[in-house]
Length: 376
Image 1 (cartoon, rainbow, N blue to C red):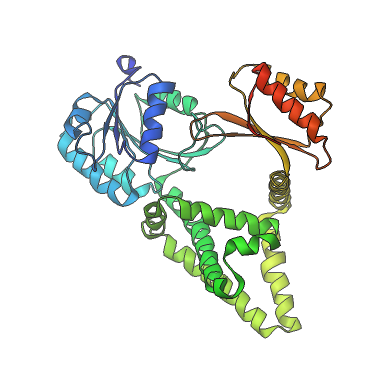
Image 2 (cartoon, rainbow, N blue to C red; image 1 turned 135 degrees about the horizontal axis):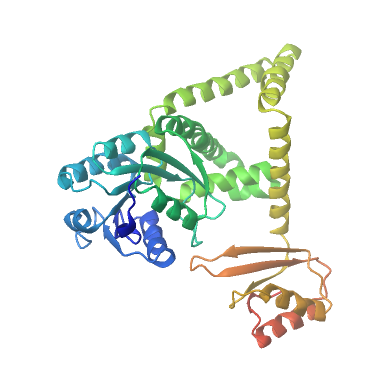
């Protein structure tokens, strides 16, 4: 294996640097890895020109829309003309076969990556799944491992074809099912009201499904369109999903005891057996935990606190203030703002002594332990 000792800190060329993930990657490479980053965005003529990336970047990362990625890679292969030999090309597209095939037409080492999450507010991908497709990797293997270690993701390695087949289930089917639900909700809106009017009647499952729908509708529609239309395996998956829904509809319309028995066998017993007891139990426990979190978020007595000093003992000092004022906590959750600040959302029982809680909030502000963002 050849080493790339001279490339321990290579210049990174980012194609698609003005996209959401491109901006996140630029911050990551610069701030977390200390690398120089050149960025070209096809929609921004003021960005670094492709020729500069091809000339100077030892690592080239494609972070472009699914529909454009393969053609754009082919353009860079033609422009590079062999200069990419001994370099590393990566892509982070939601589909892998087409972009990886396009990169393999180059003479670079080639790896396909797929972070299974939208760009985060966090500085790394800690706790998030990243699919890795190593297609042509030799001298750059140690550097790639350094990158993966810095990203702090949870990694699964597979082939591009298997990735795309799985994504037809994990992404295309899930998105399609939720978009279908959104259409049904819209069709009943004139009779029963928009989703906000239905939320007072919510179950945990309905609340989680509507949250997923809202998330899809809030992000870039081009991504969801390309996940459906760009994956050659989507049509088969949607056909099977439609057949299952159609069969259930037919059984409900029959409504007799035989239909109920078929429902129990086909949709409940057979699926439970196929999943296995461990997967069913683990999934059910996850559902319960999410339910507890949703319940905590409805607490009417709460504080939101930012801890300005990210150091060991900061949270202990915050909790000690509540102890001094005789205030018991019922829940505590952390989250990050778009700017990356860590906020703690602290819940209290409805019968909490409000005067004591307000005194504790004032003490937090005075002491500098934290900054209270939401008063009780």
